[in-house]
Image 1 (cartoon, helix red, strand yellow):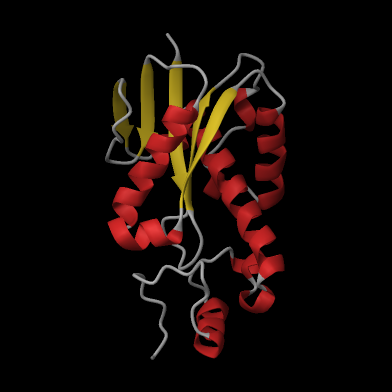
Image 2 (image 1 turned 30 degrees about the vertical axis):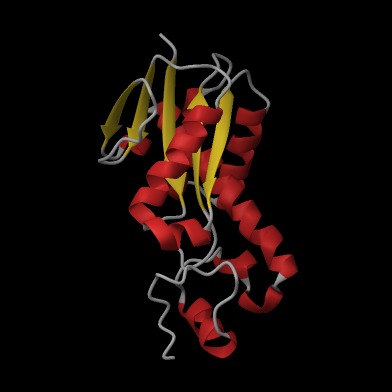
Length: 184
């Protein structure tokens, strides 16, 4: 059976995209390196992502941008990112497992598994790839607009990020529908 895992990164930030990955693991991936991306250091995540990219695994990323998030809300945006990742994968899986409570419309058997990123290798791999890709995008964007220090907090609602929003206002990649803490 061709089995695919999907997870997303970026539901909670005040800025940037929400990113999902769909992964069909290759036999050459050492399963012991995988874990929930939140339980790995940034260095270990990058190393795992590199191993996954160099393996026989097949994967795709799905992105939903801040304007879309503002228009359809973060819940629907997360599902849309998962759909885009699923439909972008070059091999059609027979079954998809998704981390969380809800499944996207992916045109095949799909099951939601709460905390699946803690114990299902395909979801763990997806968690890692989505997080690394999103973080890299935020770091690269920081060179375009360095005022917000996205390379440090990746758009998450840290006090420093909120202070910078207060100082500079919202950037073009801030989610206007999110509470930023900005007083005006």
